[in-house]
Length: 281
Length: 272
Image 1: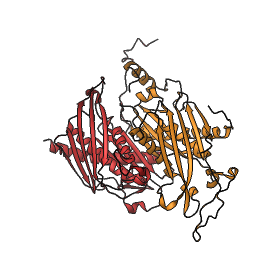
Image 2: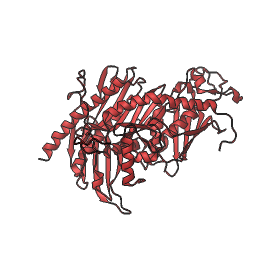
Image 3: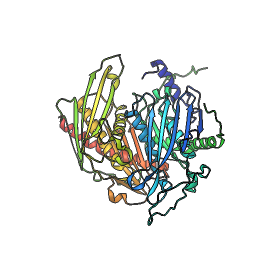
Image 4: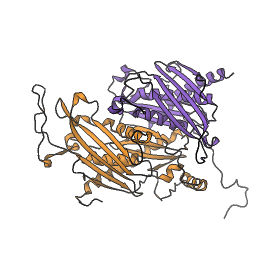
């Protein structure tokens, strides 16, 4: 897809490789595009979130929990992604799914265990209704919000079913449901994935669609517990890409450590301030 | 007001990209002995424009390249690359399939999720290396068949990264064979950093330790200032320090250069 003329490309490249970096939408290098989000609005899901970007990109995530026999399932988190105008088995969609699933590899799945035999399996369903730039960060932020606000019903039956087989039963009162954070007895912060654009020796956060056409390569880093964690991956966002200098990787790590916390903090503030507003659209 | 007394260079100069040399480092485990021997052969498929075959341990990879072929339709100023990596159907389960492949893909027609990811990574590596603008209005198709794998399901996707590295190396030899213009031959290094240890190709014994580790795969264009074309880092290490990252880059670079030297001498001998 060619969006820019050669003259525009050259202009944009010069301003992005300049020092200080000049971005077309006058953001600072580590600034995200403004996002608008809403959580817990799907009444039939355990957790839900919707994130919108200023360019009209929108992503809805729903988290549902199902009680399963632990012996019959291999992993307790399943992700399904649907992107508008892409086939589900396309390379684009399956790679998004791979990255989200991979970032959740460190998910504390012990909290999902109900008894020795049964546990919750989380189904994370993602719909990207519209997007212009690569939607991975958008999906990741929405998944963060949905998981963070997901409520699981309270188990009222016996936890120990080693000797007497028992089907788990749950409290009818939804007010007694708990957040994953409460089950964990520790702050629960699902990892988020941040897209960085690399251009020359410069790094920009959250590249827009125009910037994606220009950058040499892009890096997706995981951010968890105040630090950059694995997975760290390069992703080619346009059909033209270049090799990058190895110092950029270290620089990305430093910048990620420095600014990633702000992203997570912004999301947490968003959850706190999210008031029950019936009219979400 | 510009300086008129001195003769200055033109205003729009570009500083060449010269990497700063890194100081002396502590000796590492990465040497020629630590990489298992591998077998490589190109031009094995007659009707492909380029092909290569690589064998390391139980990992067998075959790559064929078709193109540049003309495409119909509107004009594009550079070639488009399509990559398809496939495991042979009798490789079950595929590496890391239990985590990533969904159950409904058993009676499959298209690629599985792991295959898609491998294809995507490979595409990311070869795009910076090919001179695509030399081939307007054409397409280059890369087909990778994974005939056999070292099937141990290691943590951190280590076996997937190991396989990936050799796919990239084999593909770049196939590109040399195809005669498609490229900037450099891509090779890569894949190491695990576990505490102070550097492990190349971890086995199940290395996997038993509870110590957090980082598995990294980095692919380089070694002749072009060691530019990185692909990064894939996995692990359960939560404390990724700058030193660790530097060490990872250095170790991978070292391994990449050893593999590169091997490929170079093979290519020189085979095109004599």
